Length: 150
Image (cartoon, rainbow, N blue to C red; front, side, top):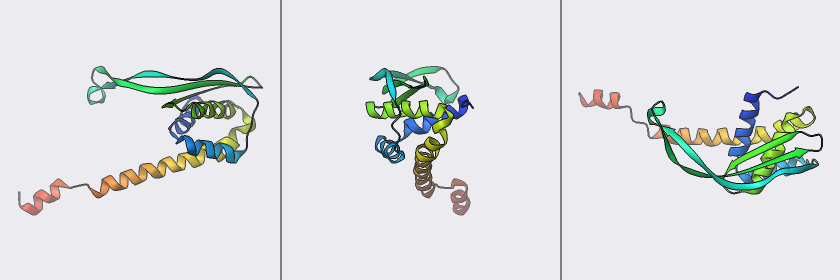
């Protein structure tokens, strides 16, 4: 069964945002070594980031970001692509390999369980820590105004 575009986007997002060391550790723990060839060796370049005023206004060029990309083809002909922020070629290649493996039925469950799930959990925990720290500094101005008699 083919991987839906939205599922693929979500999985690639988790892989691309993962710390390179964590992704490599999960990959090695899974013990996969699929036969593949590089369609596009890892290469680093710049992409222009665009923003919008207030999220819906006129677009503007925000700045450039370094990105590394890679494309691989498995022995069965499945093609995988990896784009990651930064200059880590190994990270981009590992993301491309995971993308290719996730598209087939043979390894999808193992990659989702052994690589994507732990990385997604770590990312969710990191987001929760940030939210918790921000919540600790929240000031309820309506309460302050009421107590001050304003």
